[in-house]
Amino acid sequence: MRGLLISGVDDGFFPTSYKGMRGKAPLVVTTYSEMKLVDLDIDFVVVDGKDATQKFNRMRRGDIVVLDGVTFGGFNYIIPDRKFIVFYGSRPNTIDVRKALERHFADERKEVILSVLGSLRRIETKWGSVYVYTDLDLSTARVLIERYQTISKYPEPIRVAHVIGRAIGHWHVVC
Image (cartoon, rainbow, N blue to C red; front, side, top):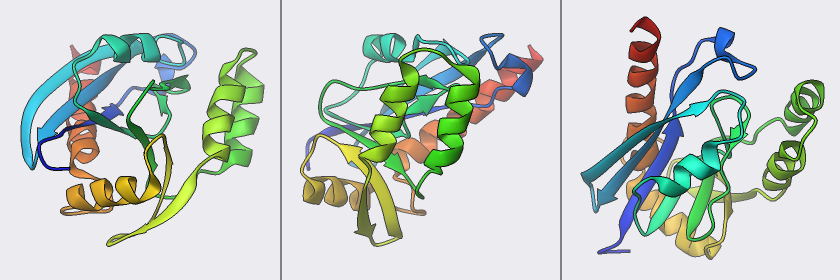
């Protein structure tokens, strides 16, 4: 793991009035070398839109990416192509997610999102159980997650992306 650049991806705050493609939410990528933040990239995605994967693919990122879930900006979603960990600190309620997707969307996102949620694997870390969907070996994913779990269950790259995304989201609403 040493020498690799590790990126964290999260979205940020958006008001509920933005749901249904009526606004944008921040998408934040932090990149770390060891425990040092070395890069930050920010864009905006349409809330409940279909542009998150496309925007993500144009953003700067490291060798391995840790995403805070599969959905960003409501039910916009990202499916990375390689070297990724989709991370959940607790098991998502797939019944509620399915109901929301069926109620609001008639496109491929239901199958894509539910496929990821159905493929989550539980792993034990020093901060307790977490759930991941990854193309990495599970032991490699666990080592990487634990390496960056410094002050909480959430690895530092996604924790910091969350903090930045939340601040940008609030700022974006008032400007």
